[in-house]
Image (cartoon, rainbow, N blue to C red; front, side, top):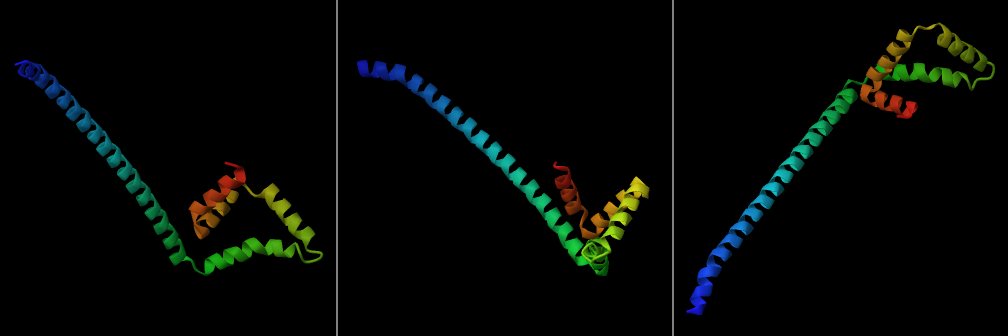
Length: 133
């Protein structure tokens, strides 16, 4: 009889605790599912961005041609001339004249040409490194 009285009082308490545990478990599972979905979405976005970067690089490589070699020659030629005795002063004078007389839009056009030729994304990375960003 005592046992049945205890059982009569304990069963609702046990049911209440079990319900609380089920709700707590369900809430935790929902939070985990949400965290998993958010993480998967971030991974997908990162993957899409990486895929876009790879497509960009591949397109730049496919479209590379003689213009890239000519551009490299034009950029490196003054540096080579600096090592030839007697020509370094002319190179310096030429750059000083360009620095003083060329308008800013020409400089930006030059940067854009290099950027298009070698991949604008990489050029912006180089510029940010040069500025210390």
